[in-house]
Image 1 (tube, one colour):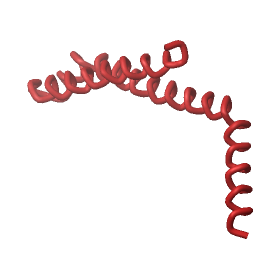
Image 2 (cartoon, one colour):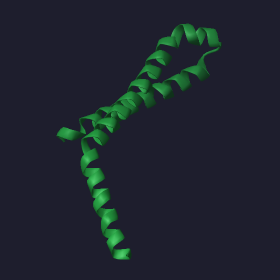
Image 3 (spheres, rainbow, N blue to C red):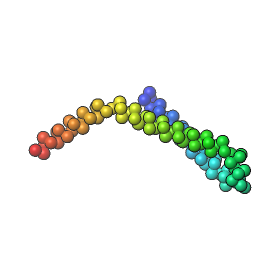
Image 4 (cartoon, rainbow, N blue to C red):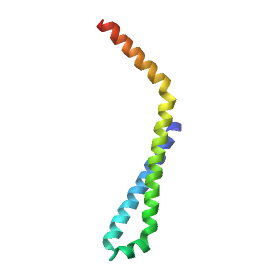
Amino acid sequence: MRRKWAAYICWVMSVVCLMGSIAVFILCNTTVSITEFAEQWGWLIAITLLLISLTDILIAAAMCWHLWAVRKHGIQSCVSTSSRSYHITH
């Protein structure tokens, strides 16, 4: 559980983004004009877009951190696997 905190945060943020997107869709279809919608619900669009961006940044940062943490082990396992397959085939 200790290492999965980023995944839990991303899941929660993704669900909130989905709810915000659904709310924007519903409100957009019930509003008469686009200017009225922008004046009344512009903050909801801004917050939804901000959360989507933050979620993407958090996912990219978590992936980079994970790849950085396992880079040495991953390269060694690839080299040992390719060395074994080379010896088997030749």
